Image 1 (cartoon, rainbow, N blue to C red):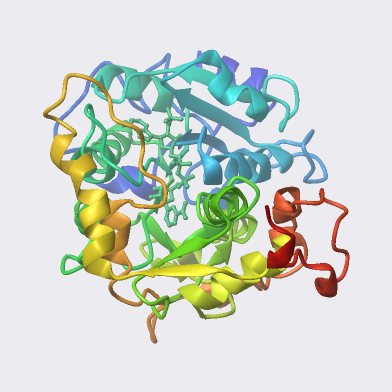
Image 2: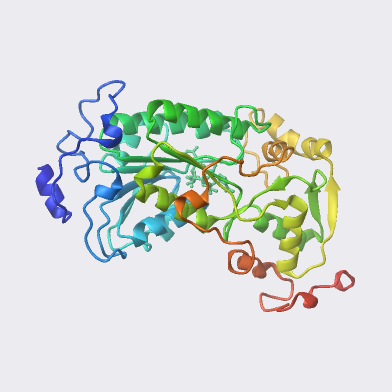
Length: 397
Ligand SMILES: NC(=O)c1ccc[n+]([C@@H]2O[C@H](COP(=O)([O-])OP(=O)(O)OC[C@H]3O[C@@H](n4cnc5c(N)ncnc54)[C@H](OP(=O)(O)O)[C@@H]3O)[C@@H](O)[C@H]2O)c1
């Protein structure tokens, strides 16, 4: 039956053997895994380099990768799915919300190659079902704030650990890639970054062959940093600068992070490695805000909000979150955990493996990667083709 299944996919049948599956499962799952006639992943043996490939490498070819991308419905997810699908991979997209959450992903691959599958992240069996036919697992699940239903520890740590355990039991998962965060450390002032660090530890304990990527704050059309700033500046005529704006960050273009994940996936040398993915330039928060103002053609106007005051603004939500009988709005500008993270610099460490080790040259944050900001220009996107055409503060109502 497995042979028949493989033939249907146009692949040659290979015996599942090595890679992550060489690890002994912590506990046997008899009705599931590479040896199960229905669910087994029958494609490759070790690393995706050995997968059967057909075609010229475009979206209609067969890369042999069958990837389950957890968190595919998010910001980074769309770029990862697009890059997987365009090289002819099958992408399984677990989703938990509305049917609309994955609609944009279907068109990224050839007919039937991007397969949405409803799942429940708290139901182990449903996770097994979405991973069952895969040979690659990518975990992009994350959230920058806690909700009434989910805390940081569960979303960033427990779920990641569970995925690693299930991948280990599966036996046919050749590559497991975890998307963590730059600055993830047990001593970080941010609870989210501490949970990310704990997840990395747990994953590497279960699957030493897993690859971990730690992107810096990501910039792109759907980002939650420059879009939030630009919308705020446009609506209120100023930008709150948390702290004094001198914290150093190393923002990175989202498509470069997706490209780095693809590069890690294709290269067995990345097995068991941790990569820190920061952009080519280090900015202070203030400098990045200047860049945003430059792109939306407005004169920068800031209100400096010292850390204690910013925390005081952000704290009531955290305090009330589980005390009121209704959901509270998601924090955007004043997110307590992000404010805590901003109290220290977050840049790529000196001896870390980086884009360079994955053969990728990340884009500078100018021109195309931040072009989406033109939609925030007061005079319309075409307004201000030169910087001298900035909106003068005198012109404001
Ligand atoms: N954005 C950044 O600047 C940045 C920087 C460094 C690292 N990262 C990390 O990179 C990864 C992807 O980031 P992103 O910006 O693409 O995140 P995102 O846009 O917020 O998307 C997060 C994904 O995680 C899923 N998710 C969130 N909470 C979940 C839960 N409780 N159960 C199941 N799924 C859940 C979301 O599913 P739904 O659509 O169902 O909500 C969505 O698919 C995350 O791990 C994040 O921590 C992000």
